[in-house]
Image (cartoon, rainbow, N blue to C red; front, side, top):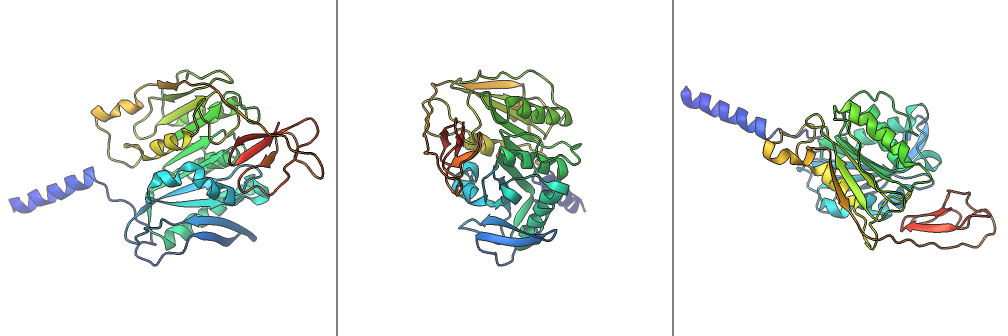
Length: 348
């Protein structure tokens, strides 16, 4: 009798320390191939690109990461950008999805893009082995806005989100439930000013029970970035990273050829102690004690290219180049097509 009680208590303790992941209905099934998929949502044909790990095992539960594209972007551009740089960092531990927006954006009229997200989730969870406690969303600009909307509408689905240079453009149905939140924004952003990013951040500072402190930010044009980790309710961190650059998905410190944003996003998504994880011990809780600020300083660099006019050109602030871009490569009179990164050039 005593040995049985001891065994029961031991099993109970193991479950408390290592909670059983929530495995989707697709576990054990033959997987679909990677590639472009189609579905009908509210009578409209919608598409998305699915990326299944090359070493996929139908009995292993994987993270699921949504990468929403920017205005005038598309799913192909997100794929070309390796899902905002997260694909190589995942090491085959995540399934990736790049949805395609209507009219190359995420207006989410009547909640139709949330419905699209719901249907993608259902399809993927029924056909692939997903750890339903590890579903994430990220995006830049309009894609960041859609990630924010997904957190508002489906807080019990998404474990955490990362918004890069976003604003409240895709709605926020609900928006009363805490969700771990990472915001990245440039002080020199002249498309969606940094104040719009602060507004999204502040919403989750409130919802996540964080201490409301002023975050340090570099000045416009500065060569560094500063990360602030707020003190929040256990399991619901908020991190704010401000940099001196403009409206870009892959900010770099001056003199650096590689963006720090993918690493910061991956760190945030995979940190221990997020909602649903085992409690973090006091010895490892220093990552969220704060707010703390981490600053990296280097020099600034930029480049630009001018495109010849002629034909139909992009308007001021419109896209004019980048991987996957099939639109105009010239700009309206008085503006120049300026290179921001491999995925995006903009008329400024």
